[in-house]
Length: 426
Image 1 (cartoon, rainbow, N blue to C red):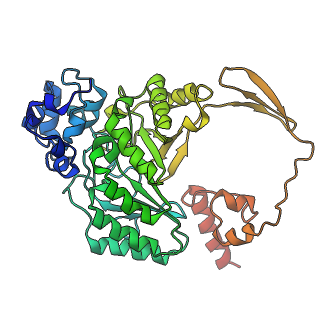
Image 2: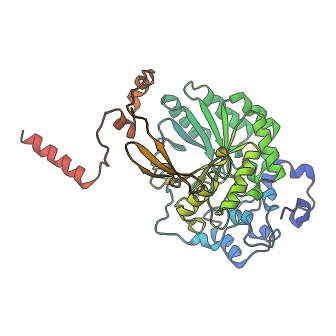
Image 3: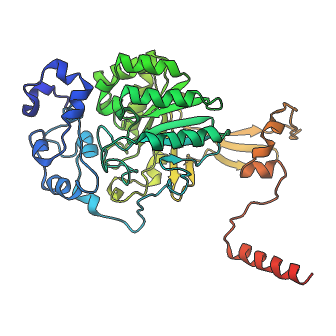
């Protein structure tokens, strides 16, 4: 049910100019129960949830996003993402305040360096709307502010001093919660670092406040190409005319958009909902990039589905829609393991001569391997370039190691003791 803002008594006197001004939208976010009760018919569970959870993670819902809620449907996929429930008080023994161990991979405050060539740089702990499935709730929405310039400068200095970093993701919170001037300052400083090739922006503004995507913003961003933007549509109902217009403005500025959905129970854990979403995204020049399995963050277990549900979705997409409309289904591994792709199994069997495959219809095929299976590097020169930075499995392929094992296993500890003992007796 897509209502117009004039239907909502809370904003009945607002002008169209005000409604389309992102600063007005930001200033008039719903943050207390009394305001929310004027917009939707609240359940007891929702009312108790709002009261109980405002201290844990702020509630903030833009008037625009609130206008997309079905006021009478308590299972509306829009309101389920925005309104706290009492379930957020249920903390599983497997939940963690920092499930992805971002803090352990943080060399300076506000920066996560997990992968060799890219970093996550947090520039705001504020969001236009605080999604109830937020994985970074330890940080986002705690004081609703932007990161101070001294912290920003330390992050930029770290990036400047580490020449392997070629890709910087600006996020938070929401990277577009800062002013155009503030964002321009950060982009200018990053663009002065020669080894930074790509800058990405992480924002949900096109989804929850498309008014933020102004022509002035995009004209400023165009100065810092190559620039990419990642956003977060979870349900087809979020792809409104206003959201599509905002995304068109971004893409027309030469900024590709990738979408990162989170798999959410009773919201989008249906293959047909997800198929509709990805096809509408592609139709509007937005690349379906990831579907994330919900993280083990505190208080969001009620949003989590089984991993099998995600595999089923990919199974129903592969072959049934365009290949570039199929996102990668990933588990962002607890403990800082990074994104691990999870896919249906299409390789049934393999021998030295053949592999047996199945396709999306369930038909089975054989593929004959070549007689000469040897492989030799073509002396492209890149091997030497990267030789000093081999990581993980690369070391096995390059014959630097014959095995890779965890360093803290009982056997490795025994080996270390045995080495000390044998050397002392040598």
